[in-house]
Length: 188
Ligand SMILES: Nc1ncnc2c1ncn2[C@@H]1O[C@H](COP(=O)(O)OP(=O)(O)O)[C@@H](O)[C@H]1O
Ligand SMILES: [Mg+2]
Image 1 (cartoon, rainbow, N blue to C red):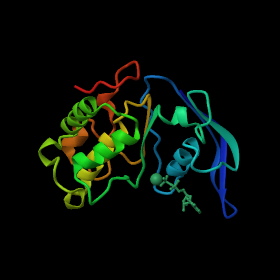
Image 2: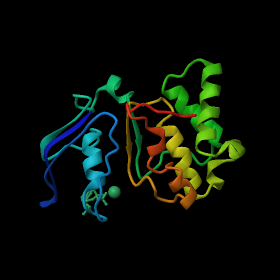
Image 3: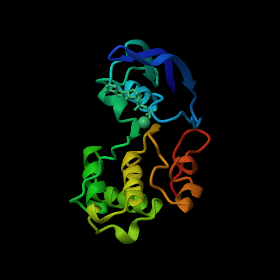
Image 4: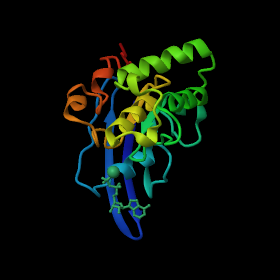
């Protein structure tokens, strides 16, 4: 599902990644751990095709993500910068992304947005502007955004950042409870 082969990355002559290799199989929840500055985000950016490695290769579903539009639709991403818009409400944010992801059927889109808001516990705040949200609420909305198109592969950078203990217990941070054994999402 994900394969990283002998990645190295050097910034200004300083090696950040040195010969990193790993594989993630379908259905697996892979935790990539390390202290601040260890190179986790750098690795993810390379896998996502947002950054070129100094050497090595990274494949998602057997291909390079870079410019591959079709493959990109199978991938969900939550980066440190969560990509939700302050001036839009929670509902409007998801509506915007759902349209972007090609959910063109308005009835189905509405149903999906309702389901996502319910899943991350933001149904009662759906019409509030995200600018008024707490950090954890933003993160939850960003998670909903990342899985809106039911991606096959989900990348989460610092997923637990800003979440309360209850949300962590529910696995919202790791997205763990949403992943079935076959790697499919199981949103109630
Ligand atoms: N664009 C960049 N230019 C120069 N140095 C960078 C850049 N991006 C990351 N780094 C450096 O690479 C190291 C790893 O960063 P990062 O991958 O963000 O770590 P982590 O996500 O594990 O906290 C840090 O020392 C950071 O300063
Ligand atoms: Mg990081």
